[in-house]
Image (spheres, rainbow, N blue to C red):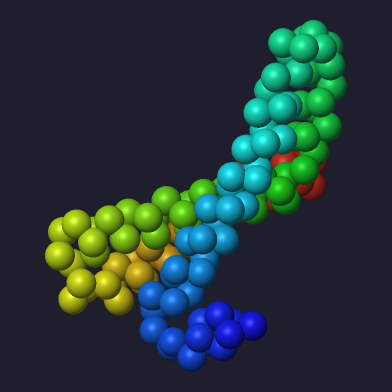
Length: 122
């Protein structure tokens, strides 16, 4: 657990950013496995099974919201990392961190606006 101690001792914006970037990357890679499998249903089991499986998956709106949150954070933080690493924006890394967080929040607010009515059947 030495890595956890090191992680908690480094109190700057890069540390949670680093941890969340790795976590979202791993979770999105794991998500791709059932996603590809589900989309392959039509090839292997026919269109009826595909329709059944997608209908079941579309009932999991909360999971879709988590996927959107993960993709949005991973994307905006990745753009932040590219800006800092390739465009010598090291001095503005803190502000870029907050911009990435704000853009993720905007995407999430819009996603809630779209998905909340679907979740409660309106």
